[in-house]
Image 1 (cartoon, helix red, strand yellow):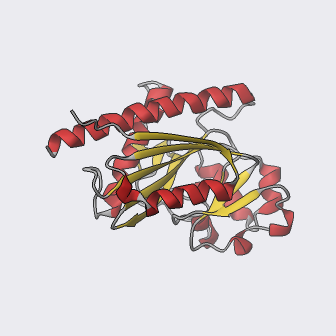
Image 2 (cartoon, one colour; image 1 turned 90 degrees about the vertical axis):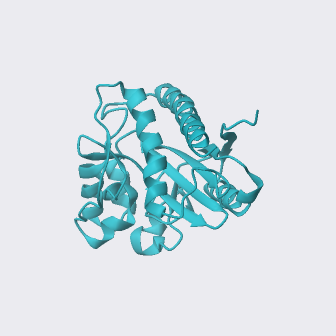
Length: 248
């Protein structure tokens, strides 16, 4: 019997550019996969990525970012700092029953998987939901930063954004690049590199850290990431199985 499980790829620690290039190649070669691909990766150094059409020089003080490894994503969306998050990507080939020509449907489908994993991590008493519509930007710059403004079908908890994503869809499939907020960003660091102070305030107002606002040890962060990898794998496989049964 043919498996319906997704393919899991761990590429380990890479530069931001290498991680983004790998995801871009996944989408380019989507026809080579029969089932969704779940890609887990880490960062060699503190990193940030920005949407394909974004202009980082208009948003960040590039001469102040220091060792921050900055790279362009193959997807859209705003700037996301991968210092305080858990990042992953999901490729859904056009041959998969999960693939839809409706972009919003794709967002809702994959973020529902992420929501399920977050609820499992926090316990059933949590009340996560997918936001039904875009949030209101405090300023025009907020829309260029992932955690500064909720967008439709982001994963919300206590009216704050705990997970977001960016997608790119082609005839070959769609690539979903996701981010789960683990910690509150360092305000002094953000003040040094983000041009708009309103964006910083919006990030603090709208972001929900999965691990709380206190001090978090490195080992706790690593344990959390491993746990989330397991949960995402199980939840995505469950959805793959359900869709394969519906479409058989």
